[in-house]
Each structure stands twice: as structure tokens, then as C-alpha cells.
Amino acid sequence: MDPLKEAWKNAGNNTKSTAEMKEMLKENKHPVLRKIRIQMIVEIVGFTAFGLVFYDFFDGHKKPLYVIIILVASLLLVIFHNLIGYFNTKRSARGDNLRVSLEKYEQELKTFALISILSRVIYTAGTIIYFAWPFYIKLWPMLLLLALVVAQVIIVARLWRNRIRAIDATVESLKEGE
Image (tube, rainbow, N blue to C red; front, side, top):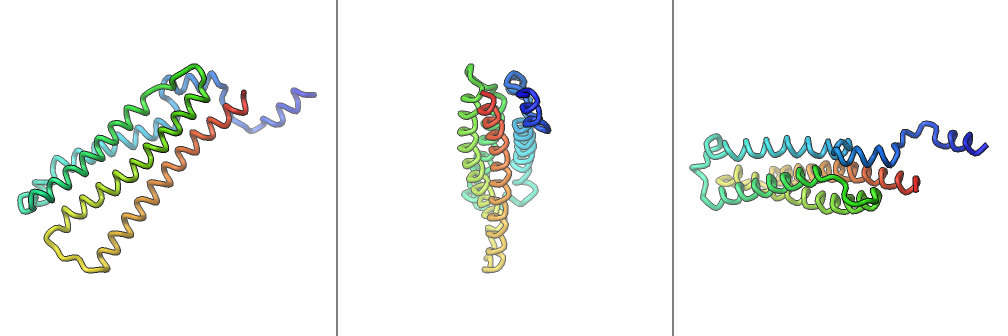
């Protein structure tokens, strides 16, 4: 009767075995990691393209040097942060115990997510400073820009929270399998 009860409890669960999960992580084919890498590649290409053309396309020669430095520094921060994240997602699970390895990776991902959100805010602030430089901005447009930054933080935070939850679900399924 035990095998029948076990089959009933697991009906509809598409849980992967530990060996299958370990193989996915060794080959870096975990769906969450793949989505993170795709996002980072798109962002790196986009930020790099913007960094290459902003001076010519957006009248960089008319801006003070320190405004250009603020924009370039914020761009480089986001690009380097994404490069570090890209290479970290390509690392396979380390150690013999997959669960412990994933728990460690989950903690690293939480730290990376926080830094990702902060670097995005710094980049947005640098971009606003660059484009709004010679203008006096009234209160309502400034509040609108602030609302856009807050909305961006909320969206990015939710995205990272969902990714971390997916990794956490994998860790929990491994705990149940032990």
C-alpha cells in the first residue's frame, strides 16, 4: 500500500531527481539561470551601445565634464555588475552536496539582487542628471521621474524575488528528497 500512497502524493508533481538537477546545474541549463543570463546579455549590449553613442547622439559636447563623468561612471557600474553576474551564473554548483551548494548560491543571488537594484537606481539617476542638466525642472516633472524610478525598483525587485523563490523551491524539493 505504501507505493500507492507515495504515487498518489507525488501525482502531478514534476519534481526532478537530484541527479537530474545536478546535471542541469553542471551544464548551466537551469531555467532560472538561463533567464538571468539572457537578461544580462541584453542589458550589457544595450548599455554598451548607449555608452558608445550618447556623446554624439545626445549633445555630449554641450555638457560639463562632470555630468559626462557621472553618466559614464553609472553606465560602467551597471555594465560591470552585469558582467560579474553573467559569469557567476555560468559557474556550476560546487561541492558534493547539491542542496548546500544551491543554498549558498541562493544567498549569493540575494546579495547580487540587492546590488543589481542599487546599481540600476544609480544608473537611472546618472541618466536623469545627464539629460536634465541645463534645464530647471519643476516639481511635477521631478515627481514623475521619481515615480518612474520607484516603479523600476519595484519591477526589478519583484523579478529578482521570483527568481530567488524559484531557486528556493528547488532547494526545498531537495530537502524533501533527503
